[in-house]
Structure formats: C-alpha cells, structure tokens
Length: 152
Image 1 (cartoon, rainbow, N blue to C red):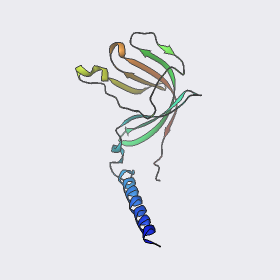
Image 2: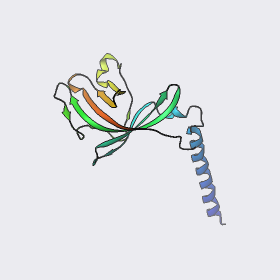
Image 3: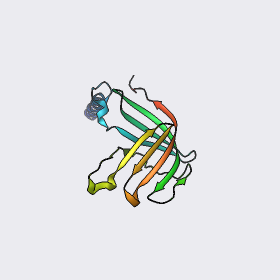
Image 4: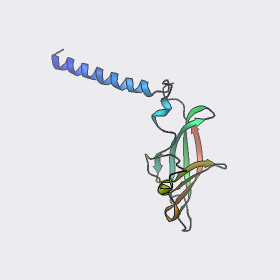
C-alpha cells in the first residue's frame, strides 16, 4: 500500500471513529440522549396527494422518554377574526419545523405565543400568534405509533 492510500485509510478510520463516537454520545444508551432535541413536535413530512402530515412527538410520558409518530389530516384553519376554513388541504406546516409550546411569552412578545396539544377524541390543535395575527389549525389524528429504539 502506498503512502497516499495509507493516509486515505487513516483519514477514513479517524472520520468513522468520530461518527461512531457521535452516535454513541447521542444513542439511547447515553443517559441523557433525549436531551439532544427539546421535547416537542417535529413536522416530518407532508403528502400532497393524501393531505396527510407526519409529525414526530418526543417527550417524557409517565416518567418514560418516548418518541411517537403521529399521522394527521387537517380539519380547519382560522386566522384572527376571519371565518374558519375547513378541508384537508387548508392547513400549513413547514416540514422540518420543531414546534414547542410557548404559552406564556413576555407581554411585549405576545406574537410569539405557541400552543400545541393533543385533545381527547383524536384531535391535535396548534395555535400561534396574537390578536388579528393569531392562527389556529386543527388536525384529526389518524394514527399513533410509538417508535422503537433504532439501535435495538
């Protein structure tokens, strides 16, 4: 093996060691693995044909950290004092966005209000903003899946 090949192999070993070290650091074997991302709702995907959203909910439930995949369909969208619009294609969520409740922002930042929660009867609601800029979106929960740990 020539010198360039040995250097390339050595570089790959260092790179792979760094990657596997990062994996071990954030795997669920690590005691604080769930703290890598704050608890909340991450919008994973949107299917424009079925109008279904996939959302990853991570958090601690009854003392146990879980990740749930929630599949939802839009029911309604309402902005400020305007009439609500209904239908499966009227909601808007940004794919990749992490949604974290912020129910009590400081008075000067009321526009930063965010409330997301799951209601009885299979309903997910998202309310954002304040006053005329307040947006309320309501979704029907079609499916819940508790995700298994990926390394087991």
